[in-house]
Image (cartoon, rainbow, N blue to C red; front, side):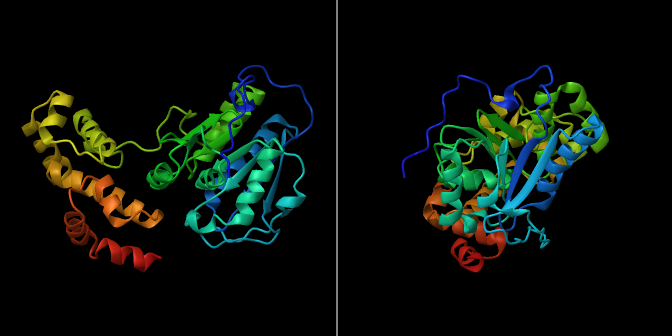
Length: 340
């Protein structure tokens, strides 16, 4: 199939227009396509923003429709089945159709779904991806040349499988007629941005206060900050920056000396910080970072074990297998077979 080329950028999309509220043209229709194992919290958070926008405005700014491919309920990742409003074929015009993904997304990239998404794109429907819904859009060839966001656990596999997609580690991305977020409650941030662009920043602030979020996060915010769960460690910039360097240099690991030089500290100071706050050496922590990345690629892609070893900075597959077995209790090949 030929790659779907992004449309010309003559006019900004709805999500990129800031300013005065739009004229009242009735409720803006939004669509949500639920796929098996979708993340329920991400879907419900997105809809909550639209509901609160209606409530705070005392008028129906938005209406929404939840559909599945065939009109039958599908389980969310926590097993809850929501009765859909219908099937995708019966969906009327929508401002944006969001594809809702979740766990095991690679198992749900079947031809009927991908063909449906391609057909919607040919009709000029603006598309969005919530959580791993972005992966489904990419698998349909609809994200080539676009910036996009996806959950950080799925980011390595997306970059590996779809090199023409400009995948980022941000909370959400709006690029022309594609709206994507990383999952979890990041759909709140994306939808607040969409509502604020259409109806003004005051309403966006009101929604954020109602939904009790600390602040309005933007597409410039990262999904995660290294060591944020360890308050003591997170207060040391050199330690946080060292971990960020490790995460950014997986295939060709840096030496302790190189990291120290880059951070303008001594190797001994870095070693002291790691021992004090992370209770391990920098090399041990770096190895764990690389093994975690390898495990994600192992479980989410079909890359050969040798290729994964190389991409995660191991000189030989044997060295990779030994390190992997030591951390996870089984060889990489056994891990893949057990989770197939």
